[in-house]
Amino acid sequence: MIRPLQEEVRSHLRSGVAITNLTQCVEELVLNGLDAGASCITVRIDIPNFKIQVSDNGNGIALADLKSVGERYSSSKCHVLEDLQQLSFYGFRGEALASIREICDVLEVVTRHRSSYQTYCKLFRNSQVLELTESRFPRTSAGTSVTIHGIFANLPVRRKAITETLDFERIRHRIASIALIHPKTAFLLVNDSTGSKCLQTHVCKSVVSTFSQLFGNQRSKSLQPVKFEHKDFKVSGFISTDSHHSKSLQFLFVNGRLLSKTKIHKLVNNILGKSELLRKLPAVEVKDNTRSESYQSKTTSPQHGKIFDKHGIFVLNIDCLVTEYDICLEPAKTLIEFQDWDKVLYCVERCIEEFLIKHNLISNSDDSATSAESGANDDDGHMEVSCHTNLEAFEYKREIETSNVKKSLHSSTVFQPKMLKQEKVEIRTRLLVAL
Image 1 (cartoon, helix red, strand yellow):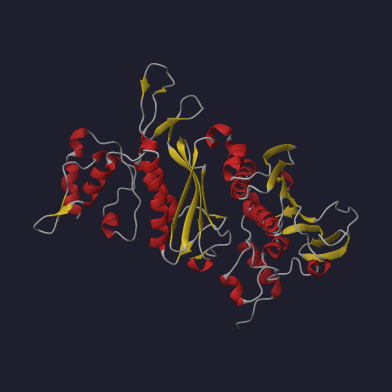
Image 2 (cartoon, helix red, strand yellow; image 1 turned 120 degrees about the horizontal axis):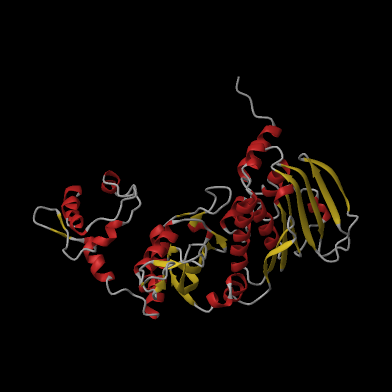
């Protein structure tokens, strides 16, 4: 017999999907603070005791609204279908607090509205409302504090998957990302299990100033402003004329919302990777001190001369209408799908190219490599591979895309050892056969 799921079952299932990890839980609370107009947000994390607290000095919550806080699909940011076409807030689904209350032992919301002198507290235990009373510890100013005790208490597998060091670093990186795009808000991250401040930014006027506070003044000096507009899209931000040993200093936003790996990330890295920005590198000293070499696309870490790939450093934000994209592909809202990828990719590509041209970082070999890749058709309709093709490029793996079936049939994604010079000559023959 088919029957509707009970409300308790529905809430439990939905909560497990809406909040999947500690980082997302913290981010949802931080974004709530930003939506409330906060200029200062403090995050306290105690992973060994599964405790999270996020406090802000935003507008606070009025008593009448506090009664609905924690109820699923209750929100002050979206009321009718038309509101989804003109969203100006991060949160709009009314699911974050409702989902958090379902997956923790105790959820405490303490708030004081800007128009009131009273501080109120709403307490949940095992997803049930215990009380809504005036707080015994009044706040000195408007704002809200949300404290979570026993996160993932009823999801033992998810709790067991938590790794203190790794999860805390993910939280730190996510807060740093949010702080970058919100320089007019101060952020503080405290590790309560050790009592240490792990991240702190102060209110400033620009992204560069916040970048300097987070990653050092030396790195921020190399950031150069970029801007490009095309139709309904505007790309702005900063790109560094320096490089980094990892992609941890690459930040991409759409309307101020951080994105994970997308086609845009791949495009930016491909363009920067072919430029002189990542090809140029002064001689580095090898660990054994017996020789010195110049590496292309390689750099050394502070750890005893260990070699790493070079990667670009950038902070880019794409401004466009919310009707141009869909950010709700997954709960964390870090994946995106655009209505017209060509437009946004064109904007980003032009923005990066203008930066490279301005700073004389266009590689001389780009043109020849492009012509070699495009090839020319012979009389039989086959592609003729130029003798000037950069065969070194074939030493590295490529990604397979559904748009190119031939690549999937002749995959080079699996790791291959570097080829000898005589083996490279066979590349032309194999390419012709593949095509």
